[in-house]
Amino acid sequence: MTQKLLKGKLTTYSEQGMEGGVLCFQDVSHIKLTDINSPFGLYENRKVWDKEDTKKIGIITNIELLIEGEWKSYIDPITKDEDYKISSLYCGELKGDLNADKRLAEKYNFTIKYSIERLNESYGLGNWKIDGKLPNVILKDGTKVHFGDSPSTFPKRPYGIPKDAETRVSVEWDDGTKENKKLTKELLIEIWDFKGLHQLKETDFLKIFSISREKVIYEGLISEIPLRLFSHTFTGHFDQISNGDKKEWETYFTEKYNAELQRK
Image (cartoon, rainbow, N blue to C red):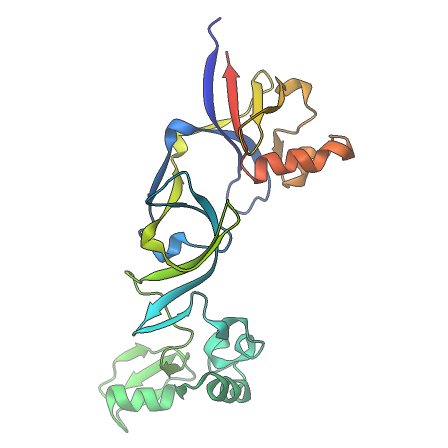
């Protein structure tokens, strides 16, 4: 029977809400480098390629975006503040801690407008009333409005990410050098097409290469490896492997090692 040879990378695939899922192989013919079209494609420690030299690979940190002429941390620092989780900005006016609101406003230099002020601005003083409790409001003409109970801030906090935001990062290149304030429009990211995703089978013959691709570090049938091809947890895939090799096999899949797959 003819063998099908695929070149690609090891990975895992899981449905939403499942940590483990299945062990897989991604066909390299369905992997491509593309522009970072949106800041939503960025996250800490993501692998990137230099647009001018795609053999140059690095890892990004310190993601920043340009908002109204000022470079700011990609994730608003306010969301990591302990006060934010108990504030009206997060919990709404009915449940939020107004003292936490005050501390945040002073610390991050913004002002807060609560519902009464916002309702007066929107509909005018005396032209509305709260129907029982927020977010239900009745206007003077009887119109019912769902107004919400989250206060507004100026400037807006936590700040949002503009659709076409300009972003920059620090890059740790694979040659050991580091580049700060690198515009992401000068970088590429790897995009995988699910058409190239193959669930591993017991009858597959696998060959795994070192990170440098200079040598083969494993080759053999999947059935000869005590892997669990399906697991509800990631570590569960490797529980049957002896302790000395377990971490290595976890690394092969988390670091997406280059591999070849022979399948009948």
